[in-house]
Length: 189
Image (cartoon, rainbow, N blue to C red; front, top):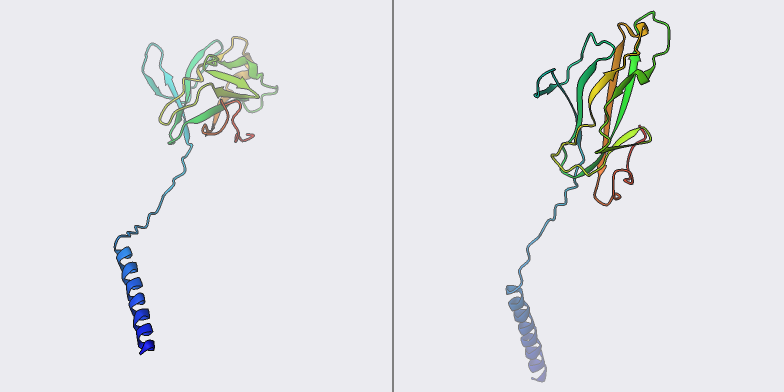
């Protein structure tokens, strides 16, 4: 009889334990949560426009023909942040002169210059750095607005082709230095 009482007490204790756990389970709620973390992106686009003489409206830049010594040609270069994050921006400007076939001589690149905007851009190591972070969706002030063909351009340059190459780079601003000059992540080209 004593074994039955011990067995009954054990069964009763087990029942109370299961009941207490079941009651506890009624008050517990579990909801699975999935956290999605999306990294930002840095994207830019070069915007080249021009103004026709006597007009204020800007048009997309088109190749020009028949340029003569002493001429100023409208070419407005800006960079647009098309990404979702603020970015530091830098630009390299490379001028190349291809002389007419059969012409002997070495072109003097100093005879063609751009009116660089030094108040909002800073030159260092062959690049022009925009002085302030470029917010998402924003566009820089112009790097330059004109190309000048100096009067000293002589017959060597007749029927030559001038190319002004613009290559722009951008890096994130977040946790990346205090300005474009101290930022990390620039490529060498």
